Picture (cartoon, rainbow over the protein chains, first blue to last red):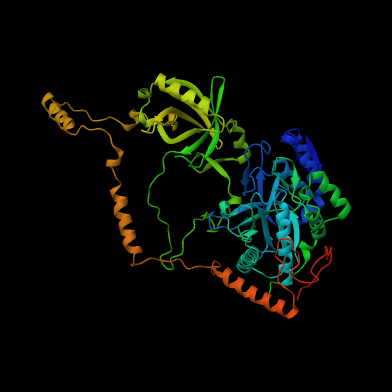
Length: 301
Length: 300
């Protein structure tokens, strides 16, 4: 099947392949979703090295991460070389700058799009801080939401506005726009300190310990993603969950409302939900792209 | 081996039966690994591709594969073209024949792996294992791993404690074995019966059972004890860190943040109960602001 996207003619392989068997959601459906949200997701992908998370045989079969942009890429796909201590000569990542590249990536069954926290022009400068709030059973997304509200208030104390999106899986992501001259050497210890502060304030509900056995019933705040080498799932990316779901930006008001209603389903968004939300509400995460925020004084160690 | 991470998964196909299995490394090479450092500043060195024409570095993206057909003449082959030849990704270990182990000269064996049953495959796995034990034969299989096709021998292996496992050894193809005639003419000589008897006696005197625990890499032992001595007090070279270490900073930073938080709270007179289960606000007036949609805010 050939698909014209902009000026490019793309060959879509196996459009009818079912990638989410439970919902009979095919590769065509995936491509339709990414086409519908292209304009909204592109600003979050543009200029950022992309790691593919490919599910060639669907979400019930093994996946693999691919950092190196595949050699068989068409000519219009842009790449950027990121130097790495572990790989001689660095890694050539794909960079999604246009809808055609996005659809080409989707055609590789890369359901999940993971991006690095910096723009390729300035690899030592994160444009944001991210915190992954991951519930350890029996804690659930509602516990994450409670912790997220506290975390928002803590950040506010340090004059940092924060935004929230669903992880698309079990938890929530808090993102703090920076867009200022900061380095990972500053954000990583600060993120760690913020997470420790959260843990100290509420050790019954919050842990910063990665060990699974210590996470039971608590919300694990993963601060360690604030690293030059770590990727985070992009807003509006699909997830490789049993049913197709999307990492979806939500407002703090929506979060509070779902929390009050004790409604865990209020944190689950399907691809069609997300397309409708964008039509109705626009891009709730837009400030992440522009909002300039400085790190608190005293954090500049 | 229990709990060892699988490095590959696929299935053994054997007639009409399919047995999902996980593959584990059976041999971990125990070698000393040295890194190359610059003798001046002890920085770890990297390898680079350099163009001998102009001496400049060549980015991996600007490299192509060339097959030398005659001195200095290359056929360029693109990755995409190679993919046309790549074996079908069957992920299967397809047993085609069963042979006697003694018929396979050890020269053919390459790397060894253990195969364990994947989830829900315990029964067919056991069945194949027991049947192979009974037949005393070795399965010859074709296997596709990481875009490459291998010939492999599948046999049963006892762990000495009553447990058995399937062991897969990748094998060289026949054309990879260098024929003896390529060694040139081997010198011949005749030996007398007496000499042969004497040699045989010597062999008899060294007869024993094979016990791998008896043999050690003495060179490695010597080098490692040298390294240990050097590490314990003598010279260890520490690479110059290019980035200041960030680890360990966080706790101090947290204390500083906490102090500033306490100060702010004292100033505003707000009680610190914000992290109670149902409490949402740490500061007054922090709630309900929603999104500053599209608004740019410069923080102080």
